[in-house]
Length: 160
Image 1 (tube, rainbow, N blue to C red):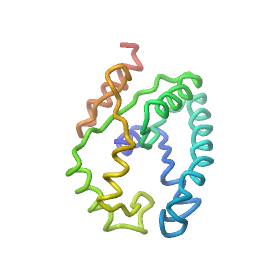
Image 2 (cartoon, rainbow, N blue to C red):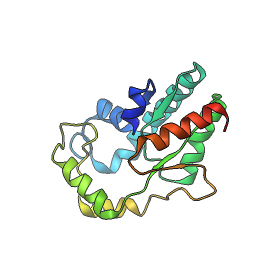
Image 3 (tube, rainbow, N blue to C red):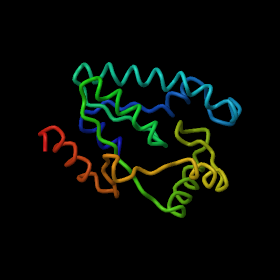
Image 4 (cartoon, rainbow, N blue to C red):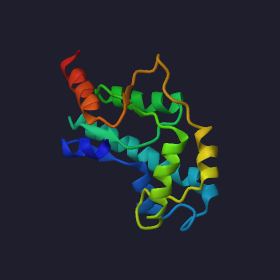
């Protein structure tokens, strides 16, 4: 979805790609256990960049997991403080679909910044750390149809 928005003129910020640019391949160029320590300053830099773009009037898509309500609230407040109307886009997929996508992505391991090698046990472990948005948390459910997200963004712009 982020690429669709980029094609519509949005600035795309992706912490995973910045991690790859700065530190290389997860689990190859740096050990897995230090990821959070390396990621923290990257996320701080991306947050500053997000605020700057929004204050300049640019539309921005942050291609990131936003794993917890607290994390999502933090990023939402950055956008709101910068004068933007943020929209959380949630893609709900089954374990089988995610594992199929990861298996295909693993084929490009170490060649693509988003191709971090994941085993199925990694997926199971990480899924327990993700908290889907609840009804009280404003979001759009993305089902693969970009028009749903584009329409929601247009509604935000027009104040609907």
